[in-house]
Image 1 (tube, rainbow, N blue to C red):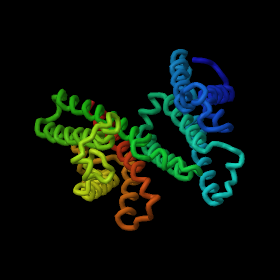
Image 2: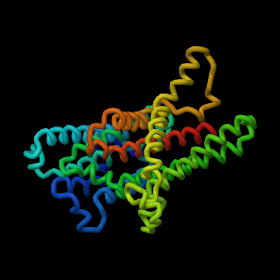
Image 3: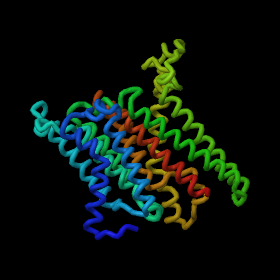
Image 4: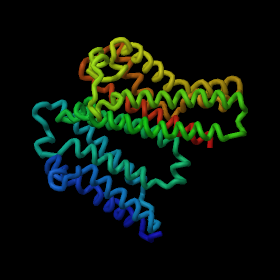
Length: 348
């Protein structure tokens, strides 16, 4: 382990992460896209690449960066971005900070780099010990990223949630990773001979249904490959609100799927309370039926979708708020990911 004083260690860590974030810092005070125009790779992608290299190098020499410091700096930058955006929104079109030409989306990306770095350099022992609260607060941080993008003066939020854009790609990637974890949980259940046959059948029924649901949702998000391969099935597309090969945008299925999302969001937000209440009131333990319930630390991922769907159904705050749909779906899929992680962990 490298021997540095705490003061120097903090400075050294900030210097390393500052170096990895230098492409974003450069664009922050110049213009968005400067790095990409020069070397044909985005500032964010370059910063992430440098960050991964630093992770590998520090791991090789057994040096541990101060994760807590990085997480704090990232959170402060994110909150600063939200505050800045709110001030800008209140003074539209006479922006207060934009006259200094700071690039708002780059600031949000910069906060993300520090938060990702904090997660990457977290000790495995620390992660295992504090996984649940970390997952819980990460849910709110994901939501705050959406809030920051929403207040972005140049409409960045609407750009990233556009059909076929970044959010849909993240949704697909999240569901794919969730499916992998889900399949691992299924294999572990099959190989585990300690689980009673009746209980094993219940586990497998729930886990297989969950995995098939992930396949369906992943296919729907990329229009079953239409976004990539640009093929057409006109008989289906003609009945679709977005001219896509999907069911969730079909007039026949849209309302049913909307209500299904409300049901899933409600269940995901509150189902973890049932085992807790049963244990409090009767001392009975429902742990062996864990596959039927979510966890308290996954609650934010479902709650945000529930609030969005509820306002759409009962209040309808307007066309602009509807753009949050894709983002809240991403949060739902992240909730699914952590449930799949839980399943794999319990069944190991």
